[in-house]
Every structure is written in C-alpha cells, then in structure tokens.
Amino acid sequence: MVEMDGYVDRSTLTPFVRLKLISAMDEEIELSAIIDTGYNGEVILSENKIQEMGLEFLGTIDTELADGKIVELDLFRGRIKWFGRIQEVAVGASRSEDTLLGTLLLADCELDINFKDGWAKIEQLVSKT
Image 1 (cartoon, rainbow, N blue to C red):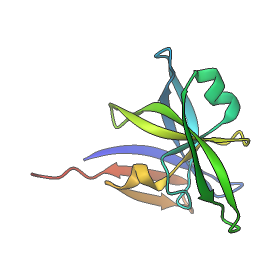
Image 2: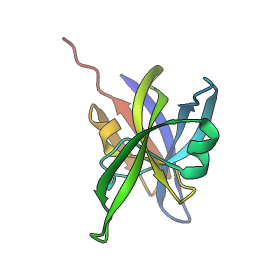
Image 3: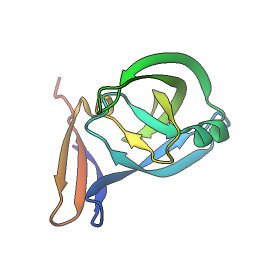
C-alpha cells in the first residue's frame, strides 16, 4: 500500500496534504492542498498560480457551489505527482488563494482524517490483479 500523510489545521479543523504540481516549464511546485470532499473534481488552483505555472486553457464547465449557485469554471490542463507518478489532471481556476484536492483523485484511495489528533492520510488502494 502506498500512502500520503497530511495534517489538520487545529484552528480551522481543515485537513491538508502536500500536493506536488508540475508547471508547463516542468518545474515541480509543492503546495498545501485542502482535502475538499465537497469538490468532485481533481484540483482547484488560484488564477494567479495557474498563470504563474503557464497551464494550458481547456475550456469552461458549469459547476454548482455549496449554496446551489451555478457558476462557470475555467479548466486548465495540469500535471501532478500523485503517489510517485506523473498524472494529468483538470485544474479549475479560482479567485481564492486556496488549493483544493477533490474527490475525483480519491476514487482509488482510502481517506482517513483524525481531527482530534490532527492528522490526515490518503492511502492508495492497489488492486491485486
């Protein structure tokens, strides 16, 4: 089993992991990403970070926010280092400076969060076939 350790910010009870992104210039950039189980995409980055990384624009999609509001989300082609492998992902643009890791990346994983002790863990479930 392969796992990624994270932490819980005790002041906000927000779970984080360190996410390694790869820019268009092949530079590796490590950021703290909020584990957002309410976001069913892959990654959300700030518009500034997307521009800084030189990511390629893919188009827009309609997405629903937690309050039920439908908004257009700009999508960009990105790459991350996910459990030691380079993986292409769709990166949504946000005006917020927060980086979000969505549930689409967790499809083959187990997520454990211990709010009391302040840790988070994502474990990649490897099939035995």
